[in-house]
Amino acid sequence: MKFLSLLAACCLLAVPAAAATYECTDSQGRRTYTATPGPNCKDANLGKPSIYTPAPITTSTTQTRVPNETTEPVAGPATDTTSVSAAALRAAEERLNQARRNLEEGRKVRHGNERNYARYLERIKGLEDAAVAAQKELDDLKSR
Figure 1: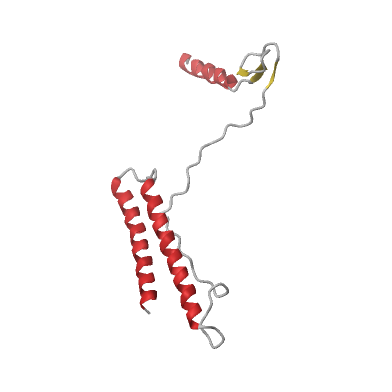
Figure 2: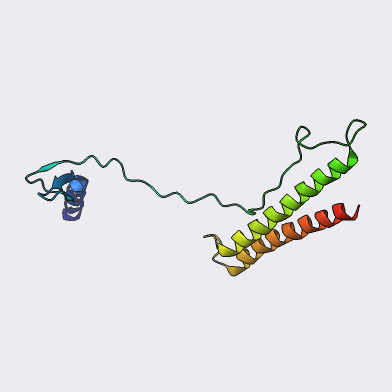
């Protein structure tokens, strides 16, 4: 019984832990924060504490671009085929450059879910595969 009354008393004493905070300014204009009010102090409304939320975990950081009918020129009777291949070459070069940038940025960062080094290597392998695929696509377009 004494244990329960002691536990209840501890719970009641823990409630005022969220005491008021006061912002005090001294004669030189410096601000200090305290739990006990004094001269030149006013109630400091600090708001609610912020809570850390980690970034969402992604399996791959590669970005793929899906060609859009309105942005990509299509070879037809009214269009010139050389401009289409030039546009396709530029798009393939941009995808290759983006894949290389993603690979370099990926090598610099190790995510929190990659405590096991094998997970880091898997992610880097995916980025390397994306860069190789983009290089192969560019080479295929240049050989046409």
